[in-house]
Image (tube, rainbow, N blue to C red; front, side, top):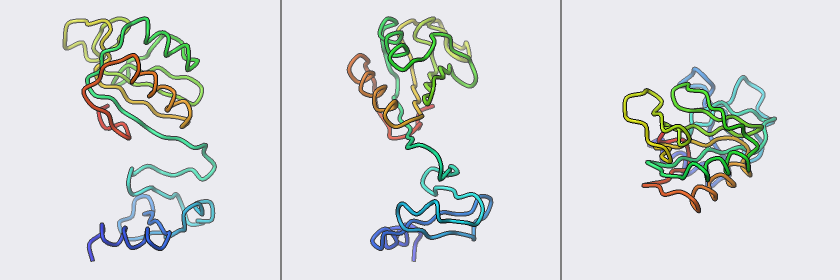
Length: 160
């Protein structure tokens, strides 16, 4: 049986498979919502490959591809999310707030591309990655959809 077929059958039974971090063979099967009951080591979501913290808040990720957003609207978004306008450049421009992280390839406020490999272009964010508390991510996504212009979107940080 293929792995994809196995996952489908497990979902029908209300089960999900989690591989133990660093192992290709050890797995835990748990019913939906029972992640806290898994006792053996860290649990990793096989869809995202990320470790699951059973005590974590409801979080999610989202992404936008090749996005234009006016400087004033980006500032408005940061204020809405409680983030300062100062970004750090760590493999992309990062704006951090309480329970939210925005990452862009291009800084829409200064126009500077994270690697400096292109001419500055204000009002252009390029790739956008958003992660954090689900409610804040949803708020950011709705705002960018309303005030920005993107080539594509993704349920996850697919673009950056």
